[in-house]
Length: 477
Image (cartoon, rainbow, N blue to C red; front, side):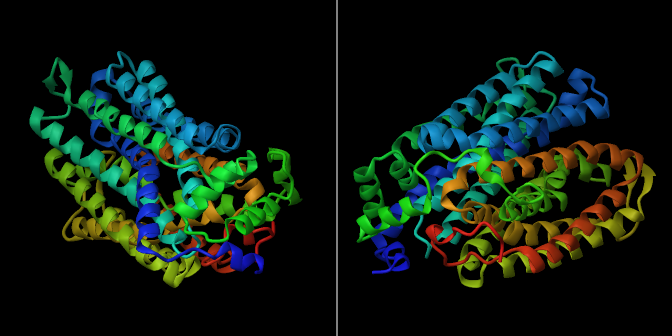
């Protein structure tokens, strides 16, 4: 039996599929918390600004500081996952999620809130690395794309849950800044409720099996064989373990020195991963979600209508992720990304033209005639194509594109880049929107959507259907 046969010898039984789906869903609760904690600030941001009397710049930094924590968490997550194991790192992330939610809810000043949001960022950054990496390692290659897309589905469900929770709590209190229960304002409850999914995630992380790649690296071959047999349906576990061990190239843990290479000091495949991670943020998806309520208020919607519009956008985000789950293993990663780039560019261009017609400045702007609906349709068209393609497929690709030996740390570096560009976009969006106009921001997003098409077309290899152990080359095709 050759290496590929050993790696692909997964029994296609409903029992194994059900088991690996259950484990994937449990791990993906980290993605749900990722989405929840990044979006929950959306409904609270105006009340936070009013309560703490923040300038637009300080408000933008208060929102964006989480992303610095995300970058730091992503940077360290890969090394921790190789040292402690995937499960222990998940439990640590769950603890940080819970502490952040409680601390943020009881923050007494903007500096206090910033500190807790930085802690939350560490948790999100860790989850953003550990979840796609773990799912890629636990899933059979035949199902890996669809299963890895479950993480993005969980992120979108988390965003939806956050916005729905924000809308419900604000509605119950008659406004996000009004007192709700136990002397706490509704916006504080929006943040506090995140403790619940954090506890659930911690419990599930203790139940799911450890990654076979980590177990083999740790010399726990018998445990790895049980996971490969029970979860992946591998018949020839000895052959698969041998194949995985060979793919490590050396038995010692990888270090950041292993990322060095001939392309400007780094391995070429790492540059490709960092580029797609950056482009996913530079098209502007999180600017829409972080500031969606404020955005739609600025173009004429009431606060309650803005909450509703934000929830509708998040529902579209969830629904369209199922498209990626269905097609990613059938159509391939590259084709979905290319289609997504075209659709995003069209939607962003429509929003750009709409906001170019805006009257007024700052938040006091209106869109005359039909331009309001055009902006709404354009933004949601962008969300549709992003959610069906770049949202999930970028994470699928990052989880599988790196060789086994350096996967954890390379994934951590690429994810850190994703969070750094998320921070840049989030921090600049309020200032550019207020001082230069929303159309400038959307025009920039449009340009990056076009660049994303060019990059995928020319530089990204196709990974569909390949075993992780086949991924030993450090140069893109």
